[in-house]
Image (tube, rainbow, N blue to C red):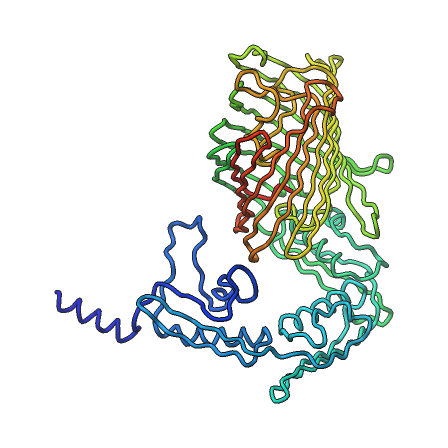
Length: 573
């Protein structure tokens, strides 16, 4: 048996050569970040190390026949970065492959011919190093500009003439914009039990409006988010001579019923998970039914909801959507346990309005909420007992972020007003107002973000109705709901609050970024009092863009000492 094993090992060695566990880059490379940093060079060589959280995956191994491919990939990449005289060679030592890069002289751009209208999109400059990526991205920017400004039938002749003898590059770009085009009629063909008028409401372009590919993409996303259609095909007819562009949309229904589950961990809820059933087209016309259960170390929440996007539509009040939600939860907030039954009836209405040249959707929600709370606490300040709270509410939302999970640009504003009254059977009478604003701006590779939230409650209420601050989505120098005055070791919250954050996010790679932040908050026991001391924290964190969204790690340091660590999914903004 031993003889056969030795023979097998010899055959393997002959076929594949020596095995290597490590790879190192030397020579003209960047130590931290840049065009020739380790992360970039690994990607160029198609070498992928498993993410930190994928502990079940092992690191890659290499053999001698891989080395030639690594060298060729590095040569091609270096030339695309403008180093046409690059030298790449390799050596091996024990279990490590060393790949050395010597860039040598970079090729420069000698001349540029481009229409004045498009010069602002050029990422290259005369006398500077020529990079293939700059040339390609410049073409994409020009094409995108044309498609966003009514010229989808353009043509472009772009050449980068590389002369290796004279070691120079001459760039020529000629653009024919073609005929200016406008949106015309839209024909919808869909296979689902959905009235076309409901689909048309998701289309953001209008008949006669200047053609803009952004409008098509937004309309596509809106239709996709309905959760009903498996295939969406949007076609424009550019064969008309008058510039009018009829649109054709073909929709194929997919699976509208689904079971979803999740499992995770964050520092606010601990280990958590859940299961949910959703029907996205319940009895047709985009009605939605969902029911589910969420569990965590702090408690659980069982819920069900029904949504109708058009329960009422007439000339007097227009269109109203309807949502009814029922839920029962048991939640341990350390200082008290709350058993809560809720029913929430919501009517919704939206308007489209132009702001700074762009049409934005304003969402308005109003309705009635019934809450029955059973509070269990050994702390006198938290008033154990049963409470029935009936209230009317109104919420306004304007969300102009480019991505709700990982926003890089845009803004968000919201206003929430809740009024409980004894006249409708409530045991507590108060007015609650909460406003929020966020702004995010990209300065590639840096992103700056700011948000502020302010709120007040008009009357003294039991602490379970107070505002609480601190945690992963609030002031990150403090643990979850732990900012402000305490009864013993338990936080009491407040009746008035301001919560503000400023964050910078710097991308080291496409998926990995570091952040720095300043969070500052005020929390008062008095109504409409905002002159209390500021609770300020400074901190840093890491972000990794995974398939389930940005994984977030933050550590905050309050100015009065200590620190707090937060884990979660999704950006704070």
